[in-house]
Length: 262
Picture 1: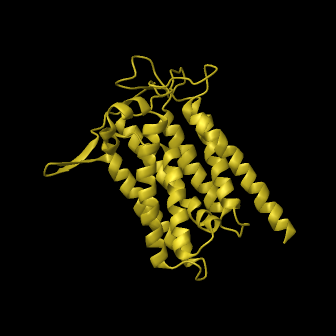
Picture 2: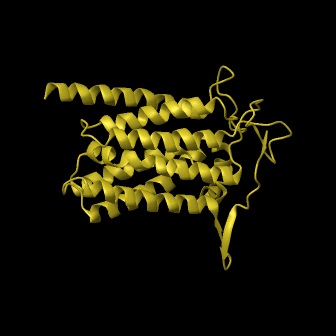
Picture 3: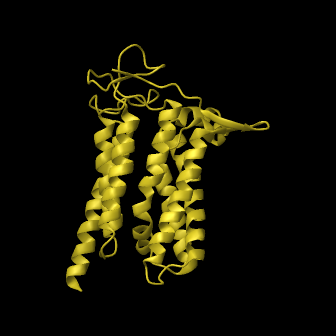
């Protein structure tokens, strides 16, 4: 049995401004992703320029923040949002939806691709392998904030959380860090290291993330304001991830079918 190591969610103060670890995790992920995309650009034999990378990261960052926060309010906290819409700006308290962030990034990518006259899926295939870095950093922020408690368990690595009662719980954010972050990054980085047909890397990302998220949801306590949506097991995270799995399979089938016809 483990005990949650209590963290101070505020990293430091700049005058009246409190800088939270959660926000620093996002900043860290944007910097690392920028560096990895520059590395991928150098291997692209001139198909990507450094100026394009900078613009793409900026577009994606706005998509993540605006989409992630809006998605959380709409998918997970609609009641409170409708009664107090201004809480949408309180990103330092956590409450970011990956699925909302994904939609935000896809919109941002569509705008960027139109601006630079690039294929939408060429951009998503280029971007997808670095996305798990942001997912991993976000889960570290969740762990520091003591967000998303796991379900009660008897496994030896069960963790007692300060606001989770006296019973040990699955450290579900650690599971998500390892699967959605570390393992998915390794899979996508190695998979994209060789030439793949258009849409294949994007499809692999959707399939991998969706499958890992559905798996992890079985160890994570459902959001208290929603509970289980159906059957005593279906959570909002699973409901939003199942279409990703189906979409990923569809993109992979289409990618290799079109390649076979070439």
